[in-house]
Image 1 (cartoon, helix red, strand yellow):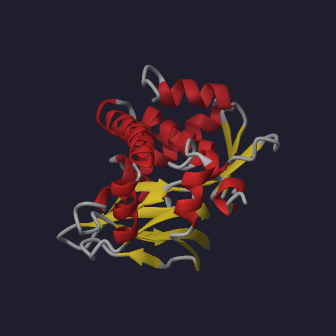
Image 2 (cartoon, rainbow, N blue to C red):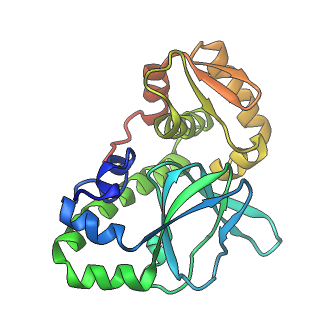
Length: 234
């Protein structure tokens, strides 16, 4: 019988996208589905990495806490994202994961998953390819933050939200910023007033419209051109 994972609507957006049905059956036996309320800590930075999680529905922010108590958001992950995979062989979570919205996660015990990778080389190879692609996305983010203008960084941030949130049938397409302007500024390494000013610029250029935390994407092609530029996508 085909597994639930095989029929999962978000399967093609996860690291398990290319696995065969038999392999998905093996993984399904390891999964416990859990629902977390908004603003719930999934795991803390430096906690023992007992589990990895796939995001079935919702949005999660990953952040590190600095010595002065301030938080630095590393990433906002949505449907199809994986949490804790980078800690699978390091024993400790590298960042704190907190739900921004109510979220449904597929939890797999780290020991079980490591055992599966050792026993099933085909799964191991497939996941390595998927992780390599994810690393490429992270490199693009670092490139964007390190070398691009504030407007380009903000556009790249909006583009990632657009790709993870948007309903392709909806027109115009809407996204939720999920975090405050201040958190966006800290994430992108620019001042809050610069975030606000560049949101206004994108609005004046009729690339977006803004209603509170909701952003309406009026011109996705222009947003992509500004956000990606000469950045290559994996």
